[in-house]
Image (cartoon, rainbow, N blue to C red):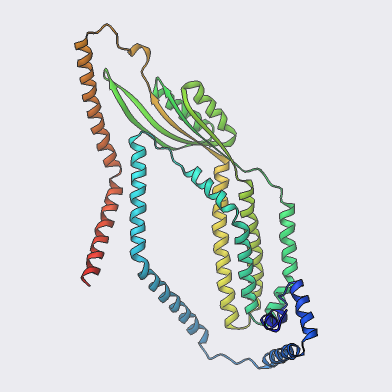
Length: 406
């Protein structure tokens, strides 16, 4: 270690923040360099003299004025940032709405409204697994840095209890009796001869299993001999213990053409978040304890900001845990149901060419009419998206024109 590196570590050494290896290197250099030793002694004397200085009394109303000044500074900063990026936020919102509208419209035209919420969230969960340790370390570092910037008496109180906090955290993690967290979901495509009867039976079984219908959409596929053939998309939520009972019922009462069953293990993901929440609560309790001992305005403001930040993180993680618990306890089954013709509806092969041609023309006309009907239905269904997108385009156009004129 040279003298330059020694000077960079002086304050960390005085605050007791050096690692064991750094401390040994620091002390070894200190024993060999008289200049650095004199500089360290000078810093120690300077700190001792500063600590002996009497506390100045604040003028009346200083705290309120300081608090208002800080709030005004934060508001001004937010206003500048908001004005700077409002154009880009508007463009981003328009793009998101356009993509969302096209996505749902395309799925609706194909008769398949199956959502990808569980899959996208699960992929996000896997991507976030590697970041929980980093988030936890950052939270601890920010708290320790905030307390280190406070006066020496509070820093001493915190460092005395730091080992207790870490031991409590390790004890909680080691004694945790983890329960498996499995999110079950299924996507089924099936056909049936009687759509209405099959759907009613499925809904009755769902309710008897203490489940509920999250989504139910029915539409007409085609009309043959004055009979309407239906199709539909259904999304049901049932308790985890009834998940396979409902799937077996669907297989027994209809002809399943495609089936995808997912069992996503989120146990590690869940308890990683749970441990973060527990450690954040420990930090919050310690900061509230320090807050009760605060003696000046600087300490109070710093501790208030840190407590508010930690409480926000706790609430956010708690919502995530609640969502996982709900998806684990209530499994999801999504169905795409199509009603098909029975054998009694088959057309006889003894018809003449003219009759077959006539029927073909009629079927083509019916298909065109059906396509126009579906287009009108989808247009009305997604009219709110179209209105919102149109409003945003008009607003962006007016903003662009106004800036161009300026």
